[in-house]
Every structure is written in structure tokens, then in C-alpha cells.
Length: 259
Image (cartoon, rainbow, N blue to C red):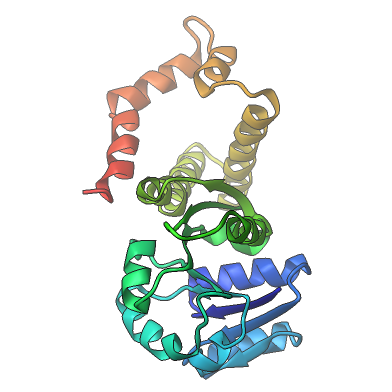
């Protein structure tokens, strides 16, 4: 597979790290206007190809992944459109809200077009990515795109109207998880732990919860019941979270980006 990735920012960088470290992508070309960013990638991964020419990167690639800011997408697409062969190539938009319809409109043609939203844990093969295919995309192309993003973590193929919700849950949602971990660390410090200890405890507690739910298949509320005893300290803490509107706040945060 010849993969070309246009963009080298935080999200794009995470994908590049994940795909390169997987060792399962035959050829990777990165295009960006920032020569220093390209030099940093080249220094770490000598096997990749770097260029400041978006069109040169896109020409002849099997899959072209566009990971730039949404307002830059029309500019980038105008640069690469003359060299694309949509009968042979797959084009993926990783730009928020730049759907396959917008991609087809900007390209002036339909084809194997996809809209994918991953998260920054792709760097470590731990992303949660949402994949939607365009109206004319083939199942074969879908399998290739899914296989690519599977190298960066877990994937779910969804209807395109669910990608935004997936983005709020996993791409934006990872920041909400970070905020909870940060709050838990602060509480640990207030109760007497050193910051490094509080960080270790918070991270391992999060890992413990995730592992337990994955390994058992339990619903979170079922797992809560296993550590909550009548009149115990756990229920007191849970009730404090509810008194503060914790559950409602999480749901409101997830829905905020859909307005």
C-alpha cells in the first residue's frame, strides 16, 4: 500500500507515528508546508518520504489522507485535484465536519471517498476511530481504509451522520477523560499524596476500570454495584458526584459540539 498523508499537525502526527511504528504500511509519504516538522519526522523515521508539495504526495498514492484544518481543505484539494485519479485512488477526509459530500463537491467528482475521525491515541495504536464511506465508495475500498485505521487502534464503521457524535465521544471525549484524571490527581494531592503518586494512582485506577469492563463485558452500573456497599464510603462519593450534576455535565459536554 502506498499511503500519502497531507498535514503534519498533532492529529496527523499521531496517525503517522502509529502507522509507521506498526511496520505494516509499505510506503508512507508526508506532505506539509512546515519543513521543520517534516525534518523531525524524517529524522525519526528515515524510511518515510517527505515533501512540501501536496500534489507530488498525492500523485500515484493508493490512499490519500487529508488531515488539515477544515478551512484549509478547499485549498489543499485545489492543489491535488489535477493529479488525482478517483477511479483508482481512495481519498479520506480526517477534517472535522468535512464530510464525503463536501469532499465530492470540492473534488468535482465522486469515487472512493471516506470521512474518518480518529483520536490522538493513534500514536500508540490506541485510537477510537469512526469510519463512514461515501455514496460511491466500494466495500473493497472500505476494507482497505478500515485495515489502515485498525493499525492505529479500534475502529467502528458508522453511518456518516454518526461520525460527529463519535467525534464528541472519542476525539473530543478523550479531553474530558483527561480532565477527570486531572481532578482525581488534585484530590489525591489534597488528601496527602505527592503529585507523582497521585498521577500513578489516577492512571492505574482508570486502567483498572477499563480493563475490568472489557474483560467482563459488564455494564458500568453493574460494576459499580460490586464496589458499593450499603452505608459505605463509595455510595457517599457517588452521591456527591450526582449532587454536583456529574452525569448531566458529561452528557451536556458530549452534546455541546453537536449544536
